[in-house]
Length: 341
Image (cartoon, rainbow, N blue to C red):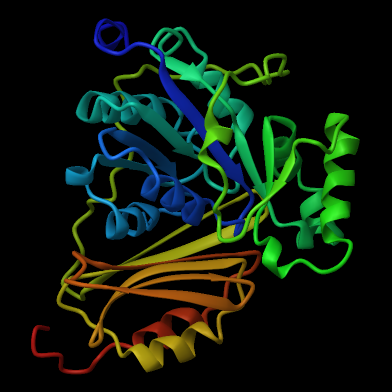
């Protein structure tokens, strides 16, 4: 990054962290919609799965001609096995975008300490100005030990400058107090907590230097930066779809890419989604009713229709257990004998 240091200096940088299903993508979309019109912002997004979905979701609402630049690093925590590709992807993103602000979204199963370690390394020390780290938490999950006993869930809270209690419109009595108590027990104060609905909070929370300076980072060795990030540009075979899987941190992911000529019946697709028991489902689908963005958490699907057509249909499921019937059910949603297939 030494060459970049002559061009870039002290780019304000924020990590937007949070466990699965807390609304990181929705939050970043909200921030992008409220960015100053004359500023260029960049987003480096990391996905646990091998099928990149978030980039397509962001690009459905934002575009480079509007000053928003997106780069994905799929295939697991970007600070671990793919630490070098993270650096390469970040280099490429900064050169292309020359941003006024950089937002980094680690996967919900990623390690924010490791991401911070890379950002504070010699390669980026003079280039990036590490500002507030925001961690999203759904307070309703604090009664579930699968979350509160998960190392990554707690690490995300430990490194946060601000805890955003997202989806607060769905909280029941006691949820807000439980969140403040949980944060206070880990960080010494519950005053770091703010509440948000649909990922919307005051953008000024991003500003100012991070207060998290003394972190016990794990010692690690990164490979040379010349390695390229894994791009999901593998050709789709003649059958019209490609399936990929991944696992780690006690979760499994399975995803599919479908060629652009494949279209889905929306009603059938909604019926299939209702049968999927998973932590989350994300999808960008070409349907007979247009392109549909889908984000399903806790069995509740949020759909958004956009114009045009997607380059590909993409689906990603993250779950604690996989189901062999997912694929056959998804295939049943394809429109038979589509004119373009």
